[in-house]
Length: 347
Image (tube, rainbow, N blue to C red; front, side):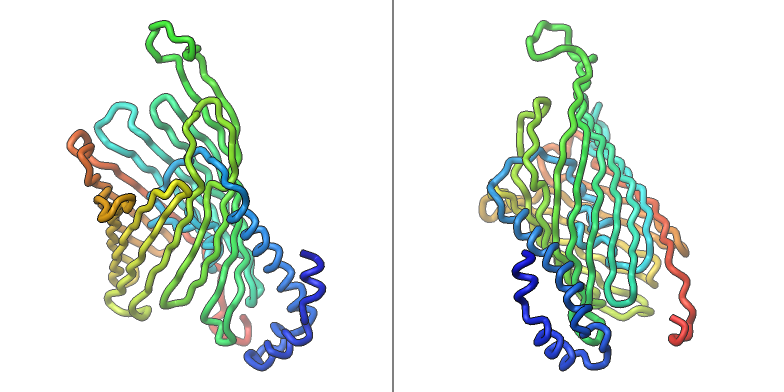
């Protein structure tokens, strides 16, 4: 990587940059480009290495349907794509009405460090997932690097990485007393690690991201069933201008793992007066043509100054739905934005 960095023609790169970005000499300075390019090169090579290394099995981490509320859960490159710092608490209760049904809580804190030309996103996601006797407690720590792709400063790219550490616990104290050699009636715990990476391109009018999650192969004695690493393609539009009465925000998520399991989510959304919104998420499984429906989620949200609140109702479209009352999600968030003086001369 160092050799590639040294042999790149930075003088010529600076000349080409100045042709297309003559209004900002700082960006096209040769030394700044070298420093800037080296950071991009390191992240890009690590991204390629993780995404193309030897096939690995990975234990299934909790599936966050909450990506509608927090897309960075599926793509670390989205972290820091907004100027404001965000704090969110989400609570999901799956298959309401079943005893010991899965429950997931997620605490999110994300922020951005920017010099006006490039930005560094930092994020922490802490989660607690309970599924019967099995519990997972963990967190991931993400970093992203954002930079402009055009001289108008309207198109940006983010490159992101995140590392996850989590504890799996299996509580066998309430298991049946029937003799079984694999049941010890104790609490068994173990730690595992994982990693994700992604790329994100975004504009006021659209966005597109690609991410690879569950990249490391943990060895679990508690959960012998493994899952493959998964790849996500997430694209969407922002149809309308700020200040309009209604804004239309559709998006599509396509996911596929190394086993070949595929699904697609269609997510139409409408924003009213920038403070009230409704979104739907329809998931269709694509393993065998033409596939089959899986779930339909309805989200309602409201923004009150720096606060935001949302509720989601997940209705399964499979035979299991008639045995429970759906899945329910709740979110409360707070946004902290940097103070800006209106006059551009003082920014």
